[in-house]
Length: 174
Image (cartoon, rainbow, N blue to C red; front, side):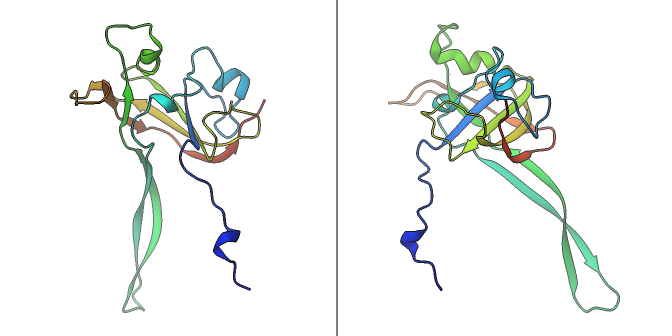
């Protein structure tokens, strides 16, 4: 029996991706809500500072599989290279301690940490035990001020480099 389109509601994307910046996670397969996501050194929600889409990518390397007995060449998936497009976010260079500068102060050039992403997580809700997240271990590139534009806010861009195993679809634990 076919499934009707209205039976597959999906999840509206607007406001439904939450991103945290976390300096330390002991076990990326079971990130701890109280002591890691909500740690004093973490910014448990950087989502509203980000002005572009959070865009990870996984690029599988292909293995050529040639066989003497075949007139065809086959492929297998080899290693996977993860990347994240540069983040664009708000900053306030003249007011270092301001709320507008919170993410800029936390995400220092060369810093190693984790981007924790809750796909389908309402940005207006606090993180909760059991929330399903992806964990990206990254090293942050330099923060570069973006050219000012009419009718916009001052922003910086920063490229995170994925430096460890990406862990997907894991639940936040106590």
